[in-house]
Length: 172
Image (cartoon, rainbow, N blue to C red; front, side, top):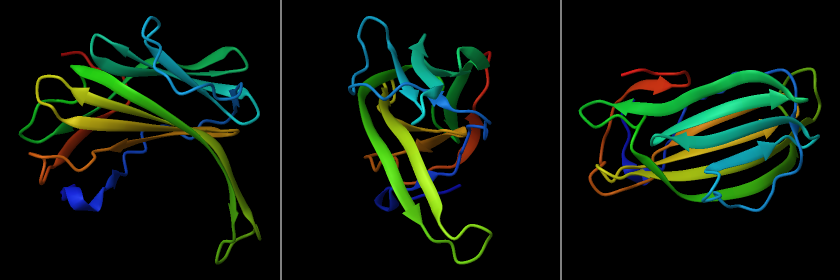
C-alpha cells in the first residue's frame, strides 16, 4: 500500500481477529504506567480485556475473556519496504483513550439500526533509531477486538509500502 502523509491514512491492517466474547472493566485513566509498562482496555460490558505492552522494544498484546486467556502474548508491528522494521525499537510516547457510543442506520440489511459501542485506546510510539512514528489503535467491543496501525504524517515518510503486518510472535 502506498500512501502520502497528508491523507492521514489508517492502514487497513485490522490485525485483531473478530473474537467472540467481551472485554472487562471500564477504561481507566490514560497513562502508560512507567513501572508496569502496559495498558489495558476493557469492553463496555467488562468481560473482555486487551492488554498492550512493550517488551524488548516491541509491541505485544494479550486478550482475556472472563479471566480466561483467548490470545496469549503475541507481537504487533509493521514492515515497510526499504525502512527499518517497526516490530522493535519502539518507545511509547503517550496513550489516549475514549469511549465510542453511537448508532447508525445501514442502507440495507436485517438491522434497522446498528449500535457501535466500544472502548478505544491509541498507543503512540516512536522508533528511537529511525524516528518513525507508529500509532496502534485498539478497539474493544462486547463481542470482539480490533487493531489498526496508523502512520501519522511525518517528515521523511512521504511515501511508503507496507510489506508485512504482524499480529503473531516473530523471531529474527
